[in-house]
Image 1: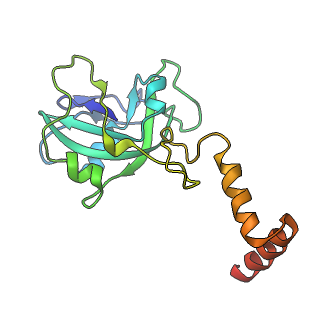
Image 2: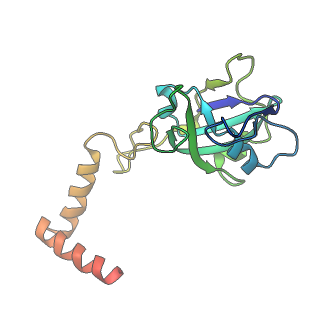
Length: 178
């Protein structure tokens, strides 16, 4: 799991910040949406970040926010990274009822003593299993192990009959559903 330690509020120039922010960091009383919007970006994130499913933001020794990562991009949302190598997180703020939120938000930071604000830790909440139903673990942001998507499709086709039978069934069902 990706972990980012936030410092106190740091003033930024919105004219020069690629995200147009006037500040970043954390202060008491900020909402989770505020924390996300001003701190989701402009981090030096390597390839390991691309394999993570969740990110926690901590400040003052306590986890303040949990986010499910959907993409990591440049500030413009399209390129891989900004010219200076920094990247921006895109994702969904997790709320009460989600296991990652409930396990971490409001609790002590799982990572302490690092000088670098970016860190990683292992968590069983990061694990996912293959979408084909085999039960094998899959890498973060993958739904299937290699080739298992094809296996799942062919198993479904076999339940209907032949490929032709499946196509006829699918086209009819799809048309009725629309």
